Image 1 (cartoon, rainbow, N blue to C red):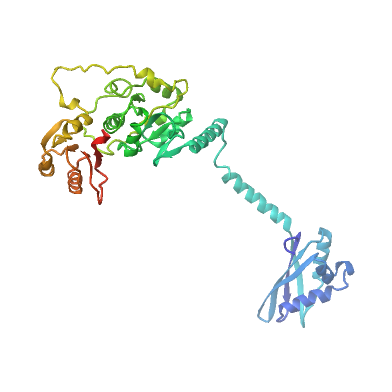
Image 2: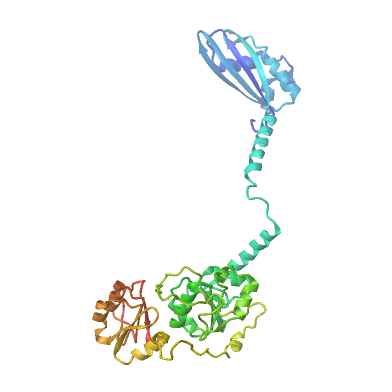
Length: 422
């Protein structure tokens, strides 16, 4: 009844003696019966669900009883007021003289309206706190959802959907770079997720035409060097100095990819590429820049076959103060080719300069006694668990041998490669 009631009658009672709830209810039924005619008889109104139950609370103190009567009504205003006035006709409750006085008639709908208004005010101040959204925000949200749906994985690394099938791939540093390139229609990018190039991506570079798309900072320089050491990079594209691939506009991406250079001549020049500081050693995970990617499937406004046009470039001749050969000019692959089959072991610094060369059988002792810790150790012998553990202990970054044994554990700080990877 309370759910459909329109009004609540509130009345107070005072009895000269001790009375109970049942006495009050009996007095309400008995002393109003026939008073207002059959149309407003309390029992009949309750039977027809137009009147609710009579709720009574009574307390006794000092030989008197005090209480409160509440009745829910779905009658109209006039009928409800008339019925409330009839309650004041009660003169006795049980054996005691009593007085009943109606205090108020509450409009339940008005109370609900107040609750609705209060709640509406609360919602108005809190539910719209995200603010208005303009058309640009809507379009960007839709574009982002499409890019997120397009991004896939290649061997566990973020990639565009065409990396598996495309003849050309773009290698970038991180997932954000792949997402940004997807926005511009480049769907053959794959991320290395850090400056430590994974073996899976290194292997991929030997099978495809690869463009390394690098950030314009030292991190990009480090990644270019490692990609050229462990993989097979055909072209290098760079973001402008100080900028990241993930932040580039469409025009900047197009310009960078059109201006890519053959890997053999890409290096210490122009847009974002610069010489590495020899005093800053190359360590795995040392740079926090974005990881470059491989070659673009077809950048907007660019020809997918750009590899053919750029491939005609020839390496720039070496220039310098002297004509004597510089050991640092050798690549890691050159050192591997010279060591494997010669029965020797060669320790190299971060610039690929030879620190020490020994017999392969003495590689462990030489590494253990080395005053300058090498960045690379190339040995013409099986890379054993013992040698790997020592390399990790001393801080060697990369171990290369003709083959490797079965490792019980492989430290994350040392990368192990076999000669055939070069």
